[in-house]
Amino acid sequence: MTSIPKVLPFSSSSRIGDSIFVSGQGGLDPQTGAVVGPALEEQTVQTMENILAILRKDNLDFCHVKKVNIYLSRRDLYKEFNEIYARYFTAPYPARTTIYCDLNYDLLVEIDVVAEISNGTT
Image (cartoon, rainbow, N blue to C red; front, side, top):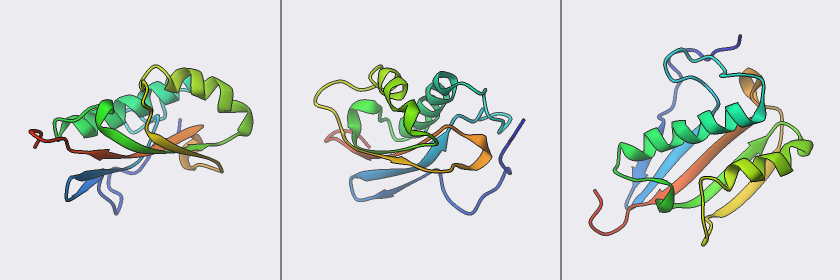
């Protein structure tokens, strides 16, 4: 089972003004660093949960997300990915880009987001 090193040279997020930039997240168990499983659904669900945990540190959730970058390891995953993704976002949807590429640690999906802090949220 593949896992990431405990320390990498980047932050899980950074704040610039009223924007939170969340680094690319994948389907890795936050306790062990291991990939949660071989299926797109389990990796995508874990990826979204990892993003949500980071957003919650700033009292944010998915309704604050304005931009999403998605990296899929294969083009044939696009339809299934969209079905899973739709569970997390509602209209008006954030702007989005999808790229097909080779990913580290045998991941099928990696996602990074930009969220905006609303008035009254710190």
